Length: 238
Image 1: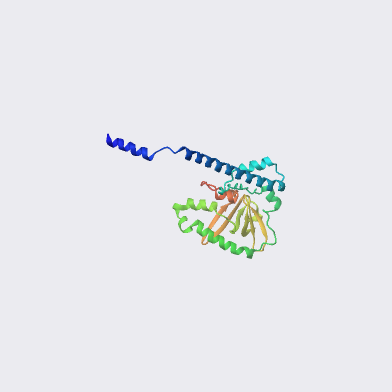
Image 2 (image 1 turned 90 degrees about the vertical axis):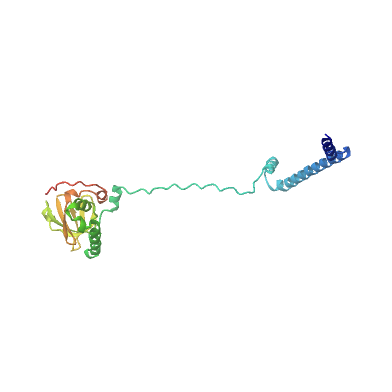
């Protein structure tokens, strides 16, 4: 009990109320400091108004509203720029291509000697594409037929062996343009000839192999033929 009484007595010694005189002086000091701060702020506002108002056409009320706003000093994240939408280029229609003459070749400017290197490149392409050493075996002949049907024939040295029109038989040249219904070839005499695929049979050589093309089976655009699946059918002769 004595210990508890001693503790309470010590607490009373440490925590005693402030004298009345000290309280009054503190209250007066706080009032003075608050009034001086408010007076300084008013003076600052008046100075700014007197400086800015004659130099601008803004209403004083708007200026005071601007002063009250808080402007952050930290730079925010930049707004994401709107990504430009990709505009697809409009492709030319078949009618526009015909008007521009994209399917027509000049009849006099193309020379056979100029196209000869193209034929050499085509032979290398066909040797790699057909893989003749493996695909000519009996087990792989279906694969060979599929590749022949899908191959690109620009640069092929082609000859007409049979046709319902006798004037086309024996025509030989390098293919410079293939369309859905025709082969356009440049002959050794530098003449451009247009051979119809329909009712014609063509032959061409790759290294030591000779291949036969039936034009009635080739009446497809080259781009469509490359992606098409062909079924093995019995050959219909002329």
